[in-house]
Amino acid sequence: NWCEVFVGVRSDPQFGPVVEFGAGGRLADVLPERSVALPPLTRTLAHDCMARSRIFSVLPNVPALEEVLIALGEVAAQGYRCLRSITI
Image (cartoon, rainbow, N blue to C red; front, side, top):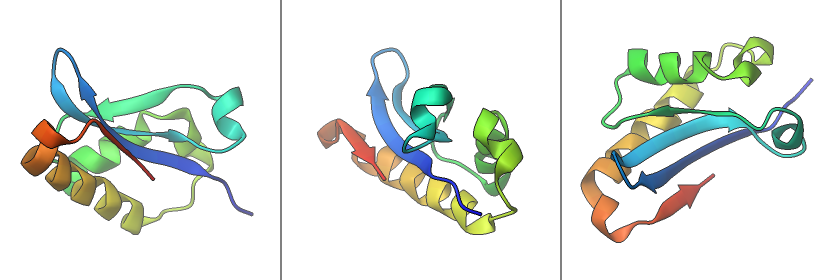
């Protein structure tokens, strides 16, 4: 079994750079919500961001996804002035 997830960074007018996580692909039409976290992220914050998404309940335990959120948080924290968004 597989599923698609959305991982990204966007600039929020109130908070600045935020990391987003949620359902991707066709599931994004069915589960259009995204959870948001403020960078920089720790492993716990990344996991909590993922756990707030409805897609989380069908995901296998994938620690590498936490690492992706942490890495995107680092990019956002260091380069947010010149980045509007990143979508993976």
